[in-house]
Image 1 (cartoon, rainbow, N blue to C red):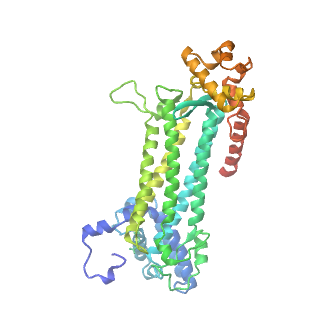
Image 2: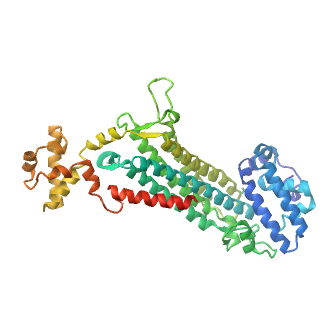
Length: 461
Ligand code: ARG
């Protein structure tokens, strides 16, 4: 029976009932709904709605429901209940009758669902943060494995300057760290319990909301009931965070797709994570990476669907909100899965260090070094940039690397060039010169890796 049947003399049209039901989505909130119900039962004792014995019986039965149904979603889904709140209520009343009915004193599904969603976001955030740390950890091991391996660095997808593979890994560790901090920030902002807000204007029972919040692990309570039942900002916040992180993962995927392409080809992906073509026998495709890149769109979709859902809604609760869970669950599930898949990719890739080095040598990635050399000899950077450009042009004409031009040729472009130029043009020199915080020199990379390792050690405890 529906929770609200009293006022109705006709039963629901079956089609409307199906349309209205949300159990098929919100069954996932069973743990959170039971957690908040147990907390609610405890504060009901303080206002003499429940005796201690009654509270204990309710709590015991709620745990029993959790144990029986948490991993039995088929049973839950086939119950025909309107939503997870009705499902739990029906079973509770079925088991303990009138005592169970008392639990619904002073509480509305409006404050109940807002509370459950916040609890769910907090739980999921913990899982996501753990996944981020694990992914950072794999990046760190790969960075260590290929600590001194040089690869070409790109801008505009044109070779720019040499970097190392570990440096590339460190860039993603940074992005992921910002993602992790964003999650923590979202949790901090949502960590206020809406329970006790009732339908829209607060409950008429003298509930200790602070104590109630503490029982559920919230830092404190929300300040306005009307806002509390209408607020879904935290869903937007977490979906924005997911979107940003997915954008990072899509760029990571794109980098590896490019490095793995037939033309570049310095990254090899193992057979276990690649797939073939039904027609072309020679193919070995990086589907896993393309899927991560592609699934990013689903997370953006969730964010924008939620924005659109909320736009222009009058205060306070509107049934439109029921749709929010679909987007929230979809967005965060995709994110979690893609974090897991990215880890799998990193575990199953190999860098062809020889080939990466050869590619880094091509493309005149040391032209900046030549310009900087001239600056050290007293020429202004604008002029040295121009001279270095002319020398690049000559090298292209002769089909040679910069360092393959002889001193006589180089001197024609600028007489201050001496024999010592050649040591500045090696790949190693290009890296070592950048010995500045955040730079690509060996020393800086070692500092950065140690710093990440230390952070992970503390956080993974
Ligand atoms: N299933 C509903 C939701 O997800 C629960 C809240 C229902 N509240 C109401 N006033 N009908 O939003």
